[in-house]
Image (cartoon, rainbow, N blue to C red; front, side, top):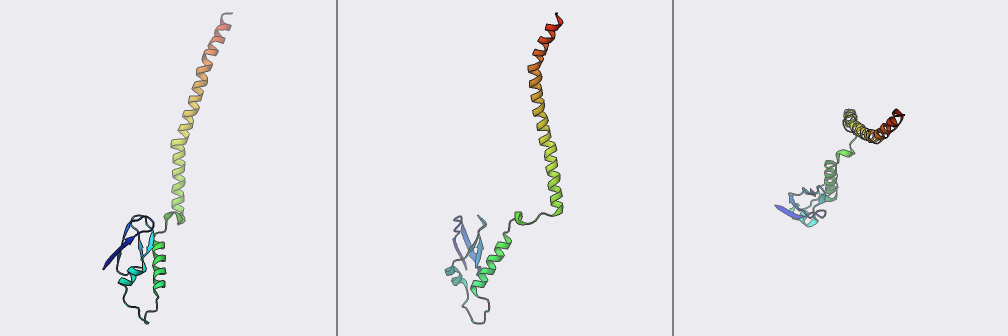
Length: 130
């Protein structure tokens, strides 16, 4: 039997199939505990032979959902990944930063020459006619 309820984080509709104690929201990725009334509607009657309590099952399911949704950012980088990152950084510097700096310096030099050239021409003409 399938039940549904609303995600408290984003308001998305969550479907509960079977007796899952925790559902992962497909919209925001949040792990949401299934409300007690939905768990009781699906759960078979509790027996004394069951050594694992409902609280333990919920805690285990939450821990598993959290482990599955761990972000890649929290995992350490391998040596190969570090090497590729260095290569990418050097490539960006060589292909973007250096040409940009050269262009800026060339523009500044062009402005200086553009301003200084007429002044130098006037000075040279002044001394050439003397």
